Image (cartoon, rainbow, N blue to C red; front, side, top):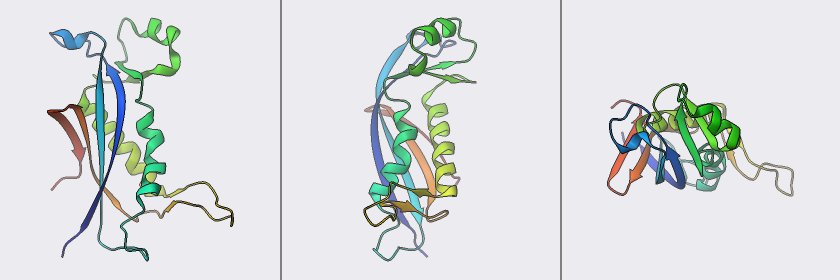
Length: 159
């Protein structure tokens, strides 16, 4: 039996530094990252959708936007205290090197958590949520993060 897949793309300007890298990636640098969030569902709702793209955008956007105009840094980086002093809201701290693979896994785990518990957007004029994703309505299959136009990493379900 087949399944339906839907994908929502986001774009952020995101920096990182890979302290242990032997070349220039050890220095702070940035990327225009495209993040693809791919979900699957076995059934369609009453509107003929796996889920509403706008609901998916509203549920996922705050997670992805945390990376926009930020710098991902590994805990233990000697410059971290100074970076946090200068720009505490613009530094994301990771326990491992913040590679594109690690970022993809982080995004996957955060988005999967939102989908598992469900999401309701702001209330409309009738008092009902404008956007709703029921718990388990769709399964997050993978998150693909493009670091450059020719290079990406993804994290997702096996198979």
